[in-house]
Image 1: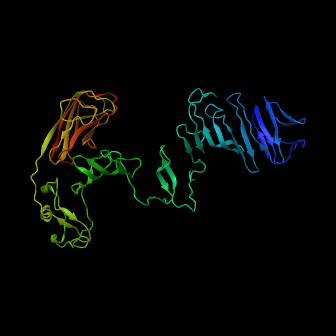
Image 2: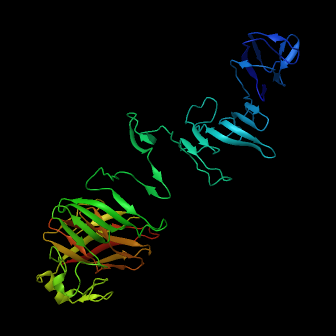
Image 3: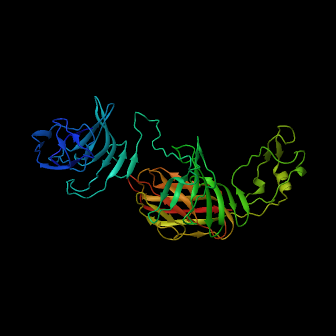
Length: 475
């Protein structure tokens, strides 16, 4: 083997052999000698120079028991080791090219003829002080196929640009593997895997899961959601599934749009009631459709809907009065079929107000119908609902003595300090701003409370001396 020490100023080493070997310069026999030299002095054995600016050439087994490679005259030089075989040469040593030079360490690099050295495994030192030899601040990070390593990621595995379709990290299970974690995440308090991927994983071409999926929450008033996204560039069209809880309703299973403006389905686990806030089109139903008497509908009730306003019901499908033809039901036939009578509904309004304030940039504040300015904390301006109602509209008039600029300003109706429903967004620079939404359909129960939530933009010119007034409409 041939060792080449590219740079060194101080070297201590032992040369030992299991059997006597020869130095190919003069065939001198060496047995367990220790040589100590400093300041670039040549090492001479029996009048022969075997180490200095040249090489150590050993024809047999060579044992190097210890040593120091030092080249610290300035930040442009540093020691390294080179390993050269028949087909490839490799290097390791202190790097001089990045982060001030002579501080980071290359664990593995390859020589590329015509290019230079290609770093493969790289340890960045990441000092945070004066970057001197005595600076002990910071902590190293490792980059595998990444030079230099990212300072804020402990270990980074990268895919090289020349081979973009390679798997970046592969974990191969053994044939004898029975029940273990292929990848595990665990806390600092023990060695128990808290989350992991077990050996019976499936992934092709989409994720398949054997067993249950649990979406856990730390707070029942702020439960986790399962979000379904179709467009990674547009989250406004997301659908959300959530286990919802409030004191008034108990636990409810809800499906709604991403901004919470449309709870299109919910199931109350306490009352065992399902609520649909949208049109239902059935492509098939039980019964031959020849007459209404052959149709069966369970739980014959309609809530929060004036029957006189009901549009005709159309049931489509092959099992209709004629093959492929629809069965049209008038509102009178629907009432007869459901065996319900129209309830007496009353519409009422609740006033809203907020005293004068000077809105701040990016501020979130709340108001209700109490005679005070908007508050930065929620739950201080509650308007309680004391009977089952449907909130159908909101009208809010806003006036600012100094109008300010025209950035988008959003007002929301917040229910039980949990769900926000957008009232409207206004983008103008007028003294008067009107936030109006006459088409809301929000089911409220006895004990629910509401507040108005203002999400202020970052204005170029802030409005000042701003007051709010208005009302909410309930059936």
